[in-house]
Image 1 (cartoon, helix red, strand yellow):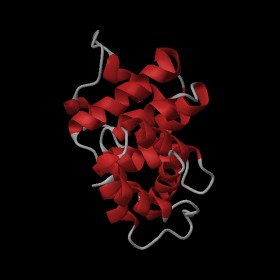
Image 2 (cartoon, rainbow, N blue to C red):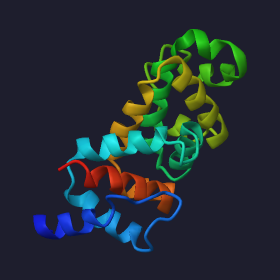
Image 3 (spheres, rainbow, N blue to C red):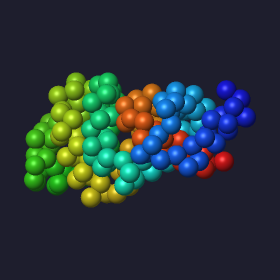
Image 4 (cartoon, helix red, strand yellow):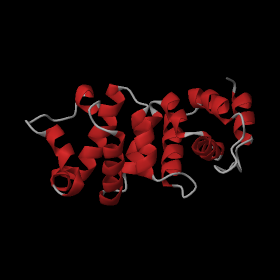
Length: 169
């Protein structure tokens, strides 16, 4: 896709709102995500994760986790677990996740990740965001590597990401 075509698509999203996304946002996002720098996509995702106009971060991460393959699930789980530390995992409602890191394993495997429920990921993401707010940026960077998966967030979130990308030039 040429730069002028890319700019033409993005210009439609300068003032886009998650509450009223353009009808063709999924198709436009697919085209733009192939050409946009991954760093811009990552900051757009982080903006969507933090927005008051989209679902809470934990809920959005749970949606992405539900639509991920085992490798992707393990990747985001390892980021989340690394951001909260073992102390928080051992306490509260997250003790069942602490078992994933027992036995000296440095990280969660795809097989283990497939055993974790989206609800547990939502809870973990909520705790991680409170403990370490930079996890939102880390999650944006992680999912920017999987732009097709991001479409699972829905048209409103995609419109917000596209609006962010339109302001990056």
